[in-house]
Length: 171
Image 1 (cartoon, rainbow, N blue to C red):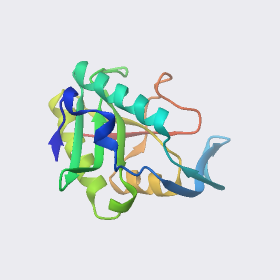
Image 2: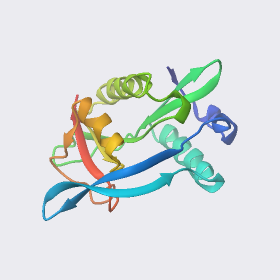
Image 3: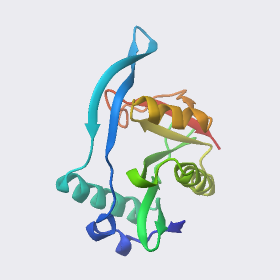
Image 4: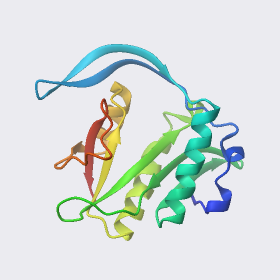
């Protein structure tokens, strides 16, 4: 696990990173309850999305946040980012803005390790909780819930994407 500097975050860093995720079911909120629905699609990033990701991660570092990279033989296989802006009624939250493991490296505990390091980093930056606007895919939600994440006590309207599940994790 490595803390990345702004200069390390380039499009080249992600040259071999495979974001692909085949989704068959997603959690959706209906009448205040979470319901698992059939929803098949493939999630992947195109070149424009990778370029946007690079800019976002660079911004995370320049504004005082953290970007972590996991490498195998100098090849990026996972990354996570924690933003520096504290928010919530008691300024208790920092956002876990990204956590991704390359397709071929999933299922080996790497996501859990990235999450743990991101949690340590957020605590070091003074947060009491991580805030996660998480993809609603069944597997993604299972990952977060296994780690102890729960529905967020407060929703941040700026961060909440329409279909995402708003979660928190006590540090």
